[in-house]
Length: 154
Image (cartoon, rainbow, N blue to C red; front, side, top):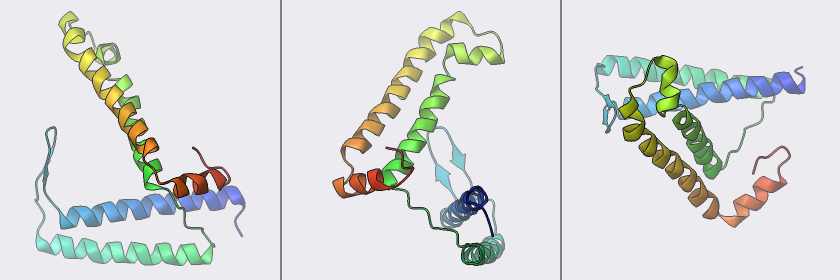
């Protein structure tokens, strides 16, 4: 029924929905989190949590139905690839966060470059280093399987 491009697009969208639903479920289990740069505080009642869980179950039911109806394949992504993609996105964001990048929001005080740019560069280097660590410590069997898959990125 679907051509390859249509099937791939539908697969990607359904995967994104499922991943977001899993994220919602995880947040319902752990509704509060405190980091250095963020805090999530629980403002939900138990009723909201129960209602959302029921809706999430319905979403997953529909995803299963669509997977079956349109023969959508399950995509397998090695954990290492998922981590590396996340680190790559952070690296790109950091490239736009130094004093030069902040200029798009207005004039940047001259003292900012000295206080910010070296720290941003250190963070970017750490993102690259973590990617290297992940690549160096993947299980060899998974690396070989990934290279064999058509269209795989390695």
